[in-house]
Amino acid sequence: MNKINRKKAAFHNLGCKVNSYEAEAMQQQLEQAGYEIVPFAPGADVYVINTCSVTNIADRKSRQMLHKAKKMNPFAVVVAVGCYVQTAMERTGLAVEADIILGNNKKKDLLEALERYEESREIGQASQTAQQELIDINRTNEYETLEITKTQEHTRAYIKVQDGCNQFCSYCIIPYARGRARSRSPQEVLEELRKLALGGVKEVVLTGIHLSSYGKDLGSSLLDLIESVHELEGIERIRLGSLEPGIVTEEFAARLAALPKICPHFHLSLQSGCDAVLKRMNRRYNTAEYQERCEILRRHFQLPAITTDVITGFPGETGEEFQETVEFLKSVRFYETHVFKYSKRKGTRAAEMPFQISEHIKSERSDVLLNLNEKNKRAFEKAWLGKMCEVLFEEKAAINGQDYYVGYTKEYIKAAMLAVDNLENQILRGKLYLEDGIELPVLRPETKGK
Image 1: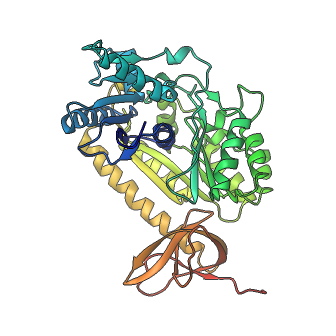
Image 2: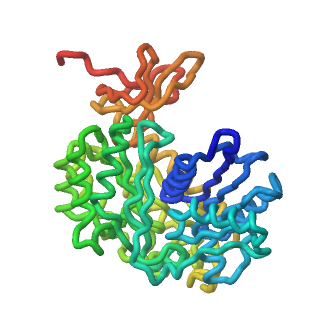
């Protein structure tokens, strides 16, 4: 593709970090083929929308973005990929307005799909219906290999190592959109990370749809992969995506604690602090078991950051059950709690449950949890003041009229330092303090020789 005829492609991604990784991989696939990547605005020849289906709202946003793309350029090729496509066409039979439709496990074929579409259009055989490429995602054991060679964040790379889920929580459509749990080969993971490390990436975040199940289909484990990544030169930090609490055992925590590159920042999915609600959700633990997993982590790490997700307003959640969740969140003392109002998802068991909660009550309960989250967050950050930590600085930012570099500790506390030198992608060790007029904790570097 010469420069004069260079086609322009625009991407829009919806959803999780796994989706973000896949969108980045597809974008780089087209870049390497000679496409010019442009903003998601009028003027592109190709629009790629990586859709999400985690809630009905995500479905609606996916449809809206497809419609927006066609409106921005009626003659452009609109490509719909991902989870909404998979569930809309396979489970509900809904039509998807796009020229090319790629389900999950077909994202690697984006370039070939575009070439086939262009060929059919050139010879006048383009159909009035979309060019569809879907597989029965629930009947495949294939892990779709995608790869990135660079990352937009420069310092940190999110790497997908696992796909699919076997849990079937009663509120979740994702096992139907992503299929059964399957793992990427450790050799492919390590090879991708070597390339990224050569490009300057210092921190890697291992992600997946159900990360805790990594390796079970390969006869290995997530711990085995982490220990292999730890040996790579250039990678100085390893952060983990969302984990199921059941993976945290004394052995798991002890082996992680023996790895200096591990970031003690653990996102343990909770969803409710009430045992009765957890049972209706088909979550495979109770609150006592969950709390014990948190205590295991605290026995092996100094002040680890434990974060979580909570759904409020799940069908049948009484005022008393909600209060149990509030008290549980207080007792565990999370660093951060991501709060979601329950969203009815067609095709899930929870959508058919009686006693659906009104939006008004969901919002009231959400506000209570968000206020509690702010208190917990401030308390955790305060506990780290004056303690030795490391900050990986990412970018320059203006704070109160002065230039600072901002970055994150291993525990994911955002911190700042006055921009005297270029600190981008540098790791500095020191203590955190509060300074007048600066909202973020400020790092005072460790004095050399001490």
